Length: 115
Length: 117
Image 1 (cartoon, rainbow over the protein chains, first blue to last red):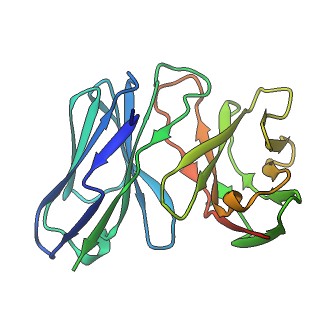
Image 2: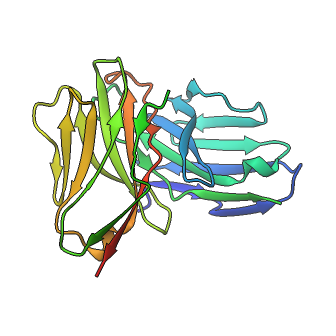
């Protein structure tokens, strides 16, 4: 059983388009995250939701809008795509109940290529 | 300021030998956690090992151990008896404010490890 799944795995689109990436976790976790890994492999947090509530919103352009319909799902919508948005986007989840370890489980990643 | 620093962009190790991947961190929070993740060429992020700032002993998980030196703010990953399947990129990460639910991970730049047969 896949713990954290993302769709699609690959996404190729043109500048200016709007696209969404979906994430689902079946671990019963309360907290979900979006990370971006750039071409140099650097990973950076974008957003985090705890029980459908936005708790982390890093300095991300307004074109990026996360949505959490329930605590098992966290989607990422990107408007007016730009070349610089090309990256691998990882979804992750963690128990998020104030535990000390709160290990994060990552999805397989979505490779977004903007042409 | 860089909070997590991995100074080794690339490392080579002979199969069956041990290797140490360096990680230093910077925080003023007394409660923090340090994590190591492995990213093979297939791209997924695999959790390896965790060390809490209050843990008295160094963490171990199978062939992985974490050499935690709190005063030096270092959390090096030691892989014993390297295997070809250990070839991957390794990331050190830190989470501040343990015990809260705002658990963002701050990652280092990563170290690419290649295991030679």
